Image 1 (cartoon, rainbow, N blue to C red):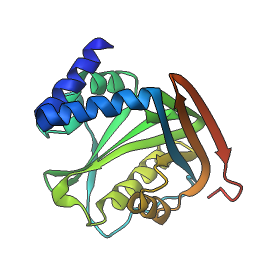
Image 2: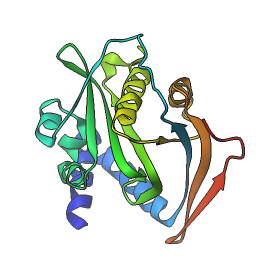
Image 3: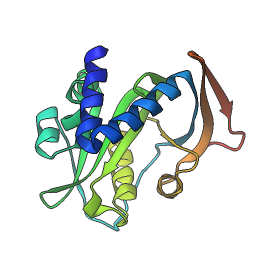
Length: 209
Protein backbone atom coordinates (compact mmCIF):
# COMPACT_ATOMS: atom_id res chain seq x y z
CA UNK A 1 0.00 0.00 0.00
CA UNK A 2 2.69 2.48 0.98
CA UNK A 3 4.76 1.48 -2.06
CA UNK A 4 1.80 2.16 -4.36
CA UNK A 5 1.17 5.54 -2.74
CA UNK A 6 4.85 6.47 -3.04
CA UNK A 7 4.81 5.65 -6.76
CA UNK A 8 1.69 7.76 -7.27
CA UNK A 9 3.30 10.71 -5.49
CA UNK A 10 6.51 10.26 -7.53
CA UNK A 11 4.47 10.21 -10.74
CA UNK A 12 2.60 13.39 -9.81
CA UNK A 13 5.88 15.09 -8.89
CA UNK A 14 7.39 14.23 -12.28
CA UNK A 15 4.26 15.46 -14.04
CA UNK A 16 3.66 18.69 -12.14
CA UNK A 17 6.56 19.44 -9.80
CA UNK A 18 6.06 20.49 -6.20
CA UNK A 19 2.90 22.50 -6.95
CA UNK A 20 1.33 19.62 -8.86
CA UNK A 21 2.25 17.13 -6.14
CA UNK A 22 0.86 19.40 -3.43
CA UNK A 23 -2.42 19.87 -5.29
CA UNK A 24 -2.84 16.13 -5.98
CA UNK A 25 -1.98 15.23 -2.36
CA UNK A 26 -4.54 17.72 -1.06
CA UNK A 27 -7.22 16.41 -3.41
CA UNK A 28 -6.40 12.81 -2.47
CA UNK A 29 -6.62 13.57 1.25
CA UNK A 30 -9.88 15.48 0.94
CA UNK A 31 -11.47 12.73 -1.18
CA UNK A 32 -10.65 10.13 1.47
CA UNK A 33 -12.37 12.28 4.10
CA UNK A 34 -15.26 13.84 2.20
CA UNK A 35 -16.21 13.08 -1.40
CA UNK A 36 -18.97 11.97 -3.73
CA UNK A 37 -18.30 9.96 -6.89
CA UNK A 38 -20.89 8.82 -9.40
CA UNK A 39 -20.90 6.35 -12.28
CA UNK A 40 -23.65 5.50 -14.73
CA UNK A 41 -23.55 1.82 -15.73
CA UNK A 42 -24.73 0.85 -19.19
CA UNK A 43 -25.59 -2.65 -20.41
CA UNK A 44 -25.91 -4.25 -23.82
CA UNK A 45 -27.17 -7.71 -24.76
CA UNK A 46 -24.71 -9.30 -27.16
CA UNK A 47 -26.78 -10.77 -29.95
CA UNK A 48 -24.80 -9.56 -32.91
CA UNK A 49 -22.40 -6.62 -32.79
CA UNK A 50 -21.32 -5.10 -36.08
CA UNK A 51 -18.12 -3.04 -35.97
CA UNK A 52 -18.25 0.49 -37.29
CA UNK A 53 -16.68 1.09 -40.69
CA UNK A 54 -15.68 4.67 -39.90
CA UNK A 55 -12.12 3.64 -39.07
CA UNK A 56 -10.17 0.51 -39.94
CA UNK A 57 -8.62 -0.63 -36.65
CA UNK A 58 -6.97 -3.97 -35.95
CA UNK A 59 -7.37 -5.46 -32.46
CA UNK A 60 -4.97 -7.62 -30.49
CA UNK A 61 -4.35 -8.33 -26.83
CA UNK A 62 -1.40 -6.60 -25.19
CA UNK A 63 0.87 -7.69 -22.35
CA UNK A 64 2.64 -5.53 -19.81
CA UNK A 65 5.94 -5.21 -21.72
CA UNK A 66 4.13 -4.07 -24.86
CA UNK A 67 2.20 -1.46 -22.88
CA UNK A 68 5.49 -0.07 -21.60
CA UNK A 69 6.94 -0.08 -25.14
CA UNK A 70 3.92 1.91 -26.34
CA UNK A 71 4.37 4.34 -23.44
CA UNK A 72 0.93 3.66 -21.99
CA UNK A 73 0.92 6.14 -19.13
CA UNK A 74 -0.42 3.76 -16.48
CA UNK A 75 2.10 1.03 -17.32
CA UNK A 76 4.90 3.61 -17.10
CA UNK A 77 3.63 5.50 -14.05
CA UNK A 78 1.97 2.69 -12.08
CA UNK A 79 3.54 -0.59 -13.24
CA UNK A 80 2.61 -2.63 -10.16
CA UNK A 81 -1.06 -1.72 -10.57
CA UNK A 82 -1.09 -2.80 -14.22
CA UNK A 83 0.82 -6.02 -13.50
CA UNK A 84 -1.72 -6.91 -10.79
CA UNK A 85 -4.56 -6.13 -13.15
CA UNK A 86 -3.21 -8.43 -15.87
CA UNK A 87 -2.34 -11.18 -13.36
CA UNK A 88 -5.94 -11.14 -12.08
CA UNK A 89 -7.22 -12.31 -15.47
CA UNK A 90 -8.17 -8.95 -16.96
CA UNK A 91 -7.41 -8.55 -20.67
CA UNK A 92 -5.94 -5.46 -22.32
CA UNK A 93 -6.99 -4.83 -25.92
CA UNK A 94 -5.00 -2.64 -28.28
CA UNK A 95 -6.58 -1.14 -31.40
CA UNK A 96 -4.15 -0.23 -34.16
CA UNK A 97 -4.12 1.98 -37.22
CA UNK A 98 -1.44 0.22 -39.21
CA UNK A 99 1.41 -0.34 -36.76
CA UNK A 100 0.44 2.60 -34.53
CA UNK A 101 -1.49 1.99 -31.32
CA UNK A 102 -4.53 4.28 -31.29
CA UNK A 103 -6.79 3.10 -28.46
CA UNK A 104 -6.55 0.84 -25.41
CA UNK A 105 -9.44 -0.84 -23.59
CA UNK A 106 -9.79 -3.46 -20.84
CA UNK A 107 -12.23 -6.32 -20.28
CA UNK A 108 -12.94 -8.21 -17.05
CA UNK A 109 -15.01 -11.40 -16.73
CA UNK A 110 -18.00 -11.23 -14.41
CA UNK A 111 -17.44 -7.78 -12.93
CA UNK A 112 -16.98 -4.13 -13.79
CA UNK A 113 -14.20 -2.13 -12.18
CA UNK A 114 -15.30 1.41 -11.30
CA UNK A 115 -12.18 2.31 -9.31
CA UNK A 116 -9.11 0.46 -8.08
CA UNK A 117 -11.00 -0.43 -4.89
CA UNK A 118 -14.57 -0.65 -6.19
CA UNK A 119 -16.04 -3.41 -8.36
CA UNK A 120 -19.64 -4.11 -9.39
CA UNK A 121 -20.50 -7.79 -9.98
CA UNK A 122 -21.88 -8.55 -13.47
CA UNK A 123 -22.65 -12.30 -13.41
CA UNK A 124 -22.52 -13.86 -16.87
CA UNK A 125 -21.38 -10.57 -18.36
CA UNK A 126 -18.11 -8.95 -19.35
CA UNK A 127 -17.07 -5.57 -18.01
CA UNK A 128 -15.45 -3.06 -20.37
CA UNK A 129 -13.55 -0.17 -18.84
CA UNK A 130 -10.61 2.22 -18.71
CA UNK A 131 -10.49 3.10 -22.40
CA UNK A 132 -7.73 5.46 -23.47
CA UNK A 133 -7.10 7.01 -26.89
CA UNK A 134 -3.75 8.57 -27.69
CA UNK A 135 -3.97 12.31 -28.34
CA UNK A 136 -3.18 12.19 -32.07
CA UNK A 137 -6.12 9.81 -32.67
CA UNK A 138 -8.80 11.64 -30.70
CA UNK A 139 -11.97 13.14 -32.25
CA UNK A 140 -11.84 10.61 -35.10
CA UNK A 141 -14.42 8.10 -33.88
CA UNK A 142 -11.80 5.58 -32.81
CA UNK A 143 -13.27 5.09 -29.34
CA UNK A 144 -16.65 4.12 -30.79
CA UNK A 145 -14.97 1.89 -33.34
CA UNK A 146 -12.92 0.14 -30.65
CA UNK A 147 -16.06 -0.42 -28.55
CA UNK A 148 -17.93 -1.95 -31.50
CA UNK A 149 -15.06 -4.29 -32.34
CA UNK A 150 -14.64 -5.35 -28.72
CA UNK A 151 -18.36 -6.09 -28.41
CA UNK A 152 -18.11 -8.34 -31.47
CA UNK A 153 -15.10 -10.11 -29.93
CA UNK A 154 -16.89 -10.63 -26.60
CA UNK A 155 -19.98 -11.95 -28.40
CA UNK A 156 -17.82 -14.48 -30.25
CA UNK A 157 -16.23 -15.46 -26.92
CA UNK A 158 -19.66 -16.49 -25.62
CA UNK A 159 -20.62 -13.58 -23.39
CA UNK A 160 -24.33 -12.75 -23.39
CA UNK A 161 -24.08 -9.20 -22.06
CA UNK A 162 -21.54 -6.39 -21.69
CA UNK A 163 -21.39 -3.64 -19.05
CA UNK A 164 -19.56 -0.33 -19.13
CA UNK A 165 -19.46 2.66 -16.73
CA UNK A 166 -19.04 6.37 -17.34
CA UNK A 167 -19.16 9.56 -15.30
CA UNK A 168 -22.61 11.19 -15.73
CA UNK A 169 -21.05 14.43 -17.06
CA UNK A 170 -18.80 12.74 -19.65
CA UNK A 171 -20.93 13.58 -22.69
CA UNK A 172 -18.42 12.50 -25.40
CA UNK A 173 -18.03 9.00 -23.90
CA UNK A 174 -21.77 8.68 -23.34
CA UNK A 175 -22.43 9.47 -27.01
CA UNK A 176 -19.98 6.78 -28.10
CA UNK A 177 -21.41 4.24 -25.67
CA UNK A 178 -25.00 4.86 -26.78
CA UNK A 179 -24.00 4.85 -30.45
CA UNK A 180 -23.02 1.18 -30.26
CA UNK A 181 -26.26 0.19 -28.52
CA UNK A 182 -25.62 0.39 -24.78
CA UNK A 183 -28.59 1.38 -22.59
CA UNK A 184 -28.48 2.95 -19.16
CA UNK A 185 -29.19 0.41 -16.40
CA UNK A 186 -27.82 1.62 -13.06
CA UNK A 187 -26.32 4.58 -11.27
CA UNK A 188 -23.76 3.98 -8.53
CA UNK A 189 -22.88 6.66 -6.00
CA UNK A 190 -19.97 6.40 -3.55
CA UNK A 191 -20.04 8.81 -0.63
CA UNK A 192 -17.18 9.27 1.80
CA UNK A 193 -17.86 11.12 5.03
CA UNK A 194 -15.02 11.36 7.56
CA UNK A 195 -13.58 8.03 6.45
CA UNK A 196 -16.94 6.18 6.30
CA UNK A 197 -17.81 4.90 2.81
CA UNK A 198 -21.37 4.36 1.59
CA UNK A 199 -22.27 2.75 -1.76
CA UNK A 200 -25.74 3.47 -3.19
CA UNK A 201 -27.08 1.74 -6.31
CA UNK A 202 -30.14 3.09 -8.12
CA UNK A 203 -31.74 1.20 -11.00
CA UNK A 204 -32.73 3.03 -14.15
CA UNK A 205 -36.29 1.98 -14.83
CA UNK A 206 -35.99 2.37 -18.60
CA UNK A 207 -32.76 0.39 -18.91
CA UNK A 208 -32.21 -2.54 -21.25
CA UNK A 209 -30.81 -2.96 -24.74
